[in-house]
Length: 352
Ligand SMILES: Cc1ncc(COP(=O)(O)O)c(C=O)c1O
Image 1 (cartoon, helix red, strand yellow):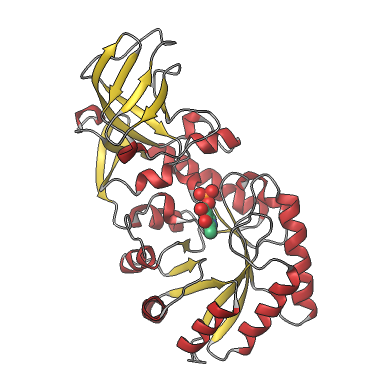
Image 2 (tube, helix red, strand yellow; image 1 turned 30 degrees about the vertical axis):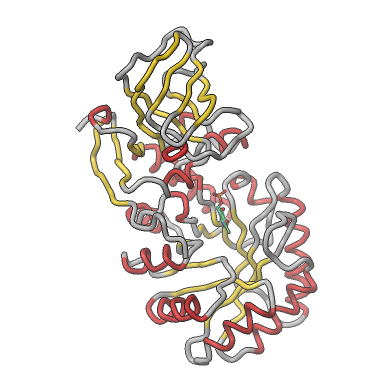
């Protein structure tokens, strides 16, 4: 089937662009001596997780236990969950995963560690734990290299846990600052005999500058597989690299300057980006996706020479690809305008 034959709204992934994005990133990792541990939050598809590993990734990263369960069921064998896992139910699910695949997790507090240490007591198969570090991103993470050392000591002292290293989700545009933080922490750990086996950095915006973070041993890019308008704005890629689009139908042309698409916030998500608007209309570079309601996108055509008509199908590059993947049941893979595969997005909607 041709892409235009799909009912709308539909998620369309350009397979050759995915393959090019993955190859480029893997080649960079190989060149600078970093292991890749891609974050599957962007695609949520075992098919692409396996492709990432085939291309050379050391393992994958998931954000949710539910995502990790889907990936383990599909045969992915090395899964990093950089999250504080709290509560008996989640710890039980983590223990079940740990029994069948190589799991690793993070902690940034004594409370999280107490939970791990209470649930994981098998000295023959300790749970690998990394300390999450806030290197300026202002989300989770210990606030200083010294705190990282203190938590590392507690992990190393718990019989059922293994101190595996450090992890950070870095602030955008500040790789030198990230490196300074991590280098100080690594030096403290080295001096204490707790040399970290892994130092895990992440994110796509600065991926092609990640060699500046010399203390890192691995990187967790997620959005790089599809890219999106945000990443184009950050200089990570170009619109021609963007592999994920939402196919939509023009359902109304109420005025000469306005088109309405059947892809609202339920299909495109409402994340904003510096370029403005809610997406890029392929083939209509001057169109502005001006506003969204749940089932409608309002497109301003006032600056467009060519204008789509009612019933035309158009493709929209969204602002943020990861959230869009979570909204669709099926990913349609396309090559040269032909749908070659339609895959259920198995790890979508995994909230816990
Ligand atoms: C912990 C963690 N690692 C890696 C990533 C991947 O980042 P990006 O999508 O910018 O590549 C994310 C994204 O939110 C994340 O939260």
